[in-house]
Length: 84
Image 1 (cartoon, rainbow, N blue to C red):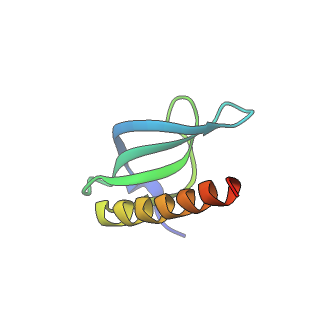
Image 2 (cartoon, rainbow, N blue to C red):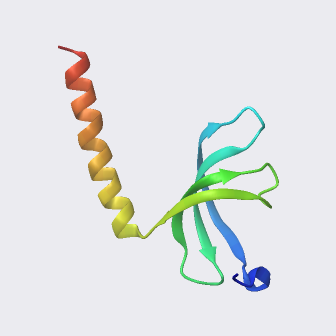
């Protein structure tokens, strides 16, 4: 089992809330520095105080840009399929 005593994080920028669950936890997009490393883009659920978190996904800037490209293509597809 991993030693979690060295696990540290700092939310550098709170970019936005994607959704909120019935128990008050919010799925957020943030820039987070994990254990003092270079900040990465992070999507995960957080409690109100940001002291508890759920599983999430971290992305580099390159991965974020690729994700945006994929999402833009999917949204364009959805927009075209609903207008037919």
